[in-house]
Length: 378
Image (tube, rainbow, N blue to C red; front, side, top):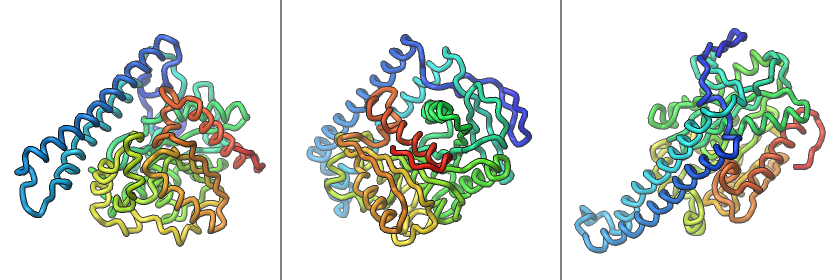
């Protein structure tokens, strides 16, 4: 795919990476079968892991390896391994379904790779019929994917970005999205600050090449956490924040018993959160690249939209962040539909469709309100 803009890298046409979700009825049915089969098999793995771990620990006390390690700790360790396999399989199944079935569809978006002056990579998305130049944009949405700093990429939510750009187009907003390839934990730990540096570089790129556009930063899960700490640490000048199921407290000890109890109805577990937290933070949970200081949120923009699932295990820490931001005079719009899981709005193509569409509409209205300088009810 050739590109006329100087800062963009020429990319070959790649339909499997640049299009949205399947649009034909046959493709949608096939896609949903792939997703649901992955989901049910992953659910089976969770149940099997719990039964297997309980049986092994009960029947094989030697699995504790030492007197210092209790049966419960061994069960948690074994279950954590199964949880990591479970979520990785589910995520892989979804991404595989998207890539394989997207190939038969027409392109819905134009996507080209961007390399900033600092060498950081991102993916710049516009709609297929968008011929506007970089300087013509009203808004650029910098998006940070989720995945616990362990999985995911700038391609992970291209279907969601497409739907959002389409909604903005209907409101005559010339918009684009820049999805950042920030380094994951296996490449850069939290203390290195490389993930934050990638966000800062993406912000600088937009400020330079889309000088007339308002910048909104957003992300889901770990991407929501990265959005917050990047804004606080680098004092980024942005118009607003969009946070989807943000990971507001990386320390796994922050999860209370009532939070852990929700993991049976959520798509992530407390053990999995603990694995990701340890990989990313390495125990340095008070480090400024990790910890969100609720007492000092002044660098955040005035307008913040937070979307979460009322049934997810992170909901209590999200509510604490919302309350802290509200206490510091931020205009926070917070929505958490009952019984919805973590990141439910990103799964609206296969589950929670009604709630997912409502969430997307609220996010679109929020972005439109920032552009048109009017109050739009979400």
